[in-house]
Length: 423
Image 1: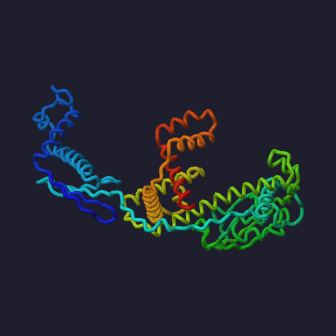
Image 2: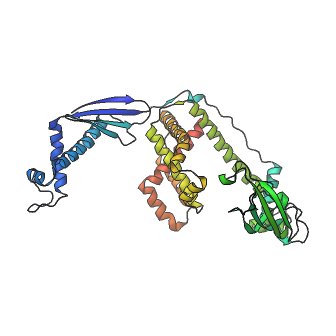
Image 3: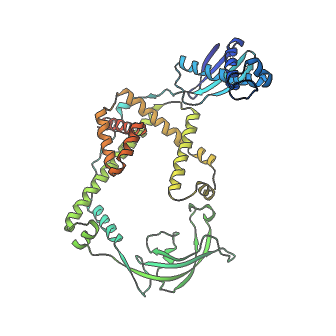
């Protein structure tokens, strides 16, 4: 066997292999053995059919084709090991010649990564602050969740909740599909409907009717309605006034389950907001670091790896849509797109993700960041504590299988890396 290897652009390698008739003969013998196990020939047990007999019952070209397949598999694997190639994709194999048997295999390998001067990256650390306004907004939200609504006979105003029947019509006066609703609840001022729609409901009483034109925004979610002008006919069926609870100890006990003064609730809110803002600030610093890291990273990512990552992004989207109770096919139809178009759309993001991973792996190796078994056990104990005792056995089983353990290890390594990089 003779072979040559050649580096190609975008972290790919071409392997060219030439096999002699003698090389192929070894694989021909194995091919006859494999095929003899799959055929039934009178007088012979499966797997014990002599080559000469098998050739009388099976087209020799079929045996030769299988022998070539075996030769490619074996020789390719041997070369990959011998040349220490870190392959990350399936090879694209092409038969060049039959005599002598010659093939080429193009395969993507782990890209080389160059990260320039990453130790000079400095990201400013800002101490998160919680303002009185932040606390008041949380209190207002808590009051809002406990707000009750009472029927009123007056004209509707901002803050009221109304129930309204409406239907949209085109310029010819025909009803437009998907623009009709009955007893539709709307809190005036929250702007949950088309921009401008709620303004026309202000001032109407129960049983009040009105007609008005609305132009849908140019970036409206459904393309069929973008920049479209429709005439809406509405009838208010109900007007309710919001009655917010008084901010007192009784209210505090209702929302927290504890008897405590309002001042204590404010302190708890401040503490929780500070923890939240601290985490958000930490995440923002990490994101800024990664963006700086990308600017200093040079790597030729194989197209096959990018394509695979783009499909993974698509898979994530499909799962997210399924959690909302939608079929992915329905989503594609509504968005008037295809899987292929989405893969193309997410290709730049896929390449960015891969470069980030490669850069981080490179630096983590350079910095010799590792985690001990004791750190792993402590992290796993934290994870397990979030689950009820009856599920602990399953979690422990998942951990022993390796996938969960690998995820926790990566999480810990990244945490230790950012603690060092952003210190």
